[in-house]
Length: 143
Image 1 (tube, one colour):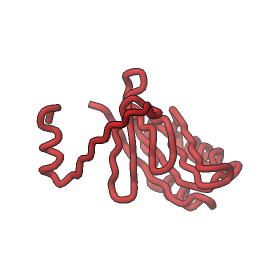
Image 2 (tube, helix red, strand yellow):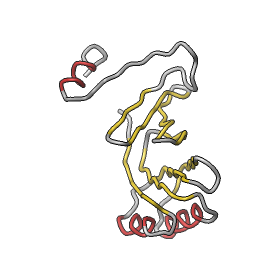
Image 3 (cartoon, rainbow, N blue to C red):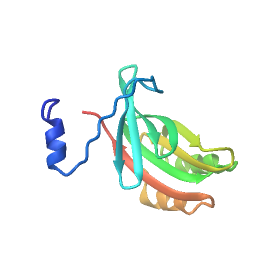
Image 4 (cartoon, rainbow, N blue to C red):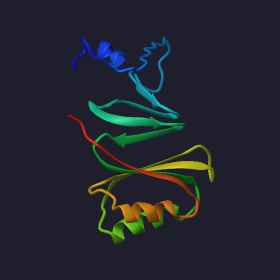
């Protein structure tokens, strides 16, 4: 795949491609958005490095490399600490953290970039925490 054939290749695989240009400057000079079902993710380059900057309704700043743990939850005191403590107890190191919220004590999204994958049992325990609505893991890499 290359710049010349990317659009044709995407369309041949059933992807709907929409390019939109705006005359007014937005938050980013260039933004690539992808929608799969009801999930929307957008990314851009920040100082030459790829970053995820939008997930669903949340503006975030996440590196595009490594193991990720994402939670959708209610913004309540102590939740972030409980997740971090549980990961630490299982020797899973957090390399970066981003929390976005729609409003105080409302729906929130936490994204942790980790050095190691989250064991299935730990992921299940996090998902069972009160106020956690969803938990997902992902492995991202560039190249």
